[in-house]
Image (cartoon, rainbow, N blue to C red; front, side):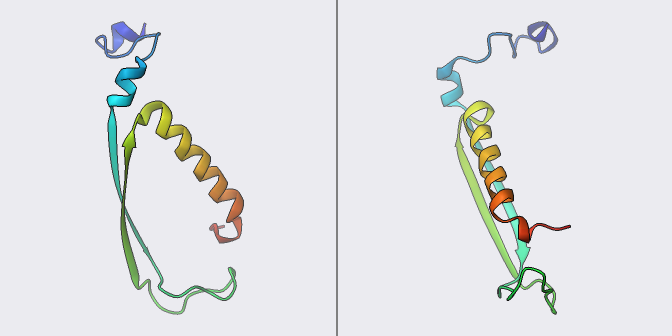
Length: 87
């Protein structure tokens, strides 16, 4: 009973395509790291992080369109950069 429990905001039919394209999102991310790359992924930095980046990601259709894209890009990053992932 999604419609009943959400006060009519959610239904079994899902949103209309027009409504999905009119919905927008914006995410601001802050990353802290190092300016210099390590020679090997197993090396450790000797100093504290010395670089900061702020990135804004925005788009339309966060529920269906953007979520799928984010999930696939995250999976590809994990597969292609597994040597850089923490243990």
